[in-house]
Length: 252
Image (tube, rainbow, N blue to C red):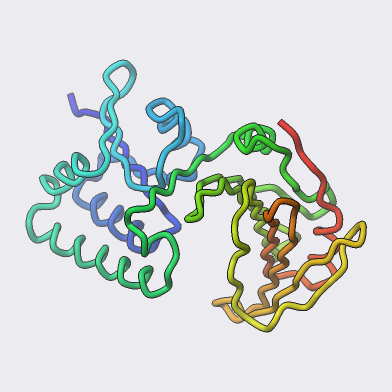
């Protein structure tokens, strides 16, 4: 009887997706699942109830015999599958990715930093993890919730990102930091000061996205050296400011 195997990988990473496809071509019976999918969330919560890093995992077996491989154990398993030539090609792809991320900076340039990620089942569960209400856009026509993700950033602060769609082309990502942390660096023109509700001011940055569209980023200071950011593409300035002014707290 063939053992059931499931490869969990980051499908938002080009190199990871290419490697998963490379492995799948040599193991067609192996299921491949995005780490952001509900199925991966269920599998990983079973083995890592306190959270997990965004990295590849291999689930072997099912039921009481199910076990998970990661790190070196997963590497040895994949090495047996790919063989020497396949491992060289995989290593070259991952090395190119590491060099690109090191050039860009960010957590990938700091291998000693452990980025632990959580994928809550709902905004209420995310608020419970954060220990405080989340600031999220109020319900309105054309605005749809996609998913939510939480992690510890490089400054050790717990952070939440929620992903939304607006209309047919608009996207919105809200990031809220729950501990004291420096605000994110934003590329583009010098921020324009805008006034939100209750006299609160924020900085609006405008830049060009990778596909040539206009990208808007709004940085809203919060008490105790915390912040909320709204990053949008496919929507105009007035719409983004309206969504920011309409944010409401969502508790656990």
